[in-house]
Image (cartoon, rainbow, N blue to C red; front, side, top):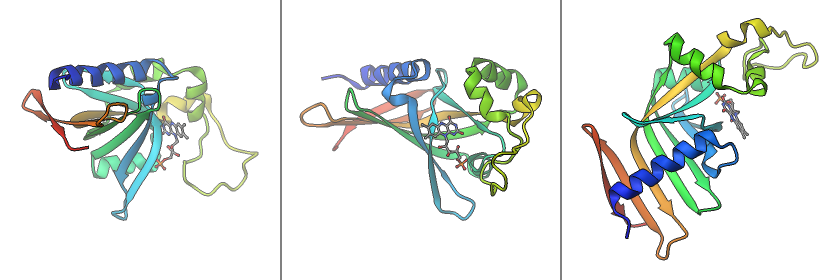
Length: 186
Ligand SMILES: Cc1cc2nc3c(=O)[nH]c(=O)nc-3n(C[C@H](O)[C@H](O)[C@H](O)COP(=O)(O)O)c2cc1C
């Protein structure tokens, strides 16, 4: 039976692969925040980065999107993803930061594919009523200003493996500079 340290490495490899191979099952993450009215909000985002020391994931979004407002108000967020091929679910929780450091933001922007950068060309605000879909003001030269890079520093992880019999569920909590993992009832 795998021990906690092995499983933690397995999770890290899975997140790293997901951030670099678009077809990976874990690439699409459902991210949950607390809405301005106190209710839950969830939406998919693409996992674009995983780094260690400390363990963090990164995703891109529109700077004027609702989730950015929500993260600024309450940076504790959760994310889940599921890889159908391995029948594994990952649950991630931690503290998110809307990156202000321009070098880090620019680095993330540079790594976006041209079609992804295209999402930031329009000057209208996401979530606002759409008056005239055919005449949207757009300005490619200012697209970068509308780009936000979110880093989520991971504090809790959970891995549920449905391919095992019985199912295996492990929880990890970050403590000081390390992680403590336990197998729990699925
Ligand atoms: C497959 C898929 C991938 C998506 N990837 C992203 C993404 O990486 N970043 C993002 O901001 N929105 C992404 N979206 C759109 C979000 O789910 C959401 O509709 C949008 O960001 C507005 O969310 P908000 O109003 O809660 O901020 C994606 C949607 C789908 C269906």
